[in-house]
Length: 201
Image 1 (cartoon, rainbow, N blue to C red):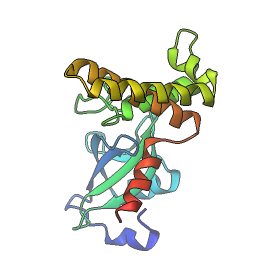
Image 2 (cartoon, rainbow, N blue to C red):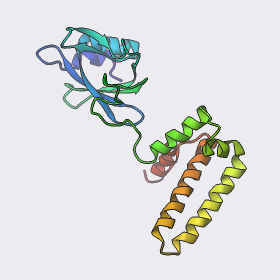
Image 3 (cartoon, rainbow, N blue to C red):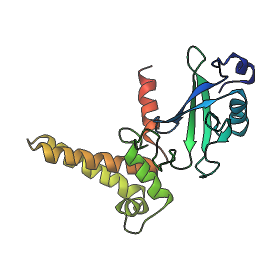
Image 4 (tube, helix red, strand yellow):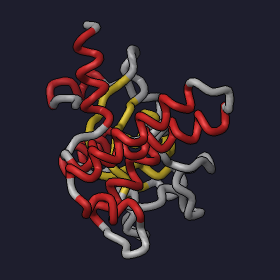
C-alpha cells in the first residue's frame, strides 16, 4: 500500500490526474481503468473504497455510489515511473455500468482450476439440496478421502489403456474430489502451491 510519505511522489499529468488500473485481487483480472486526482487518491486510501475523479462531471465519484457495486480496496501500488496506479480490489458486484463483470466485456473468473474451487467454496457457504458437492461435503472426511483413493485407482487403470477420453475424465474426477477434500480440510490450491514453491525456493 502506498504510504502517506509516498503520496507526494505520485506523478500526475498536466491536468492533475493519474490513471488507475483496477484489478480483482482474487482473480487477477483487470476490471476497469479510471482516473484519480490527489483528493480522490487520498479518499480512496482513507475509506478503502475506490473513488475516481470524473472527467465528464468534473467531480469526485465513488464507484458504486449509485449501483451499490463498490470496489473495496485491498492494495494500492504504482508502476516504475510512479505515473500509473495499480489498485487491487474486491468488487461487490458487476463493475461495468452495462452490468458486465468488467468494463472490457470479459468474465471475471479465476484462471485454471480457480473456477471449480469457487464453485466448491460457494457450495460450502450456500448449500443446495440438489448438489452432489454438498452431499459429498456432508459425508465427512473419511468418505471423501475414500473417494479420492477410488478415483486415483481408476485413473491408474485408465493410464494403462489407450482411451484418452476415459483417461482425461478419470483425471478430472480425481482433481474434483481432491479439491473437495482440500475444501473440507479448510485449505485451497494456493496453500498447496505455496508448499511446492517453498520446496523450490
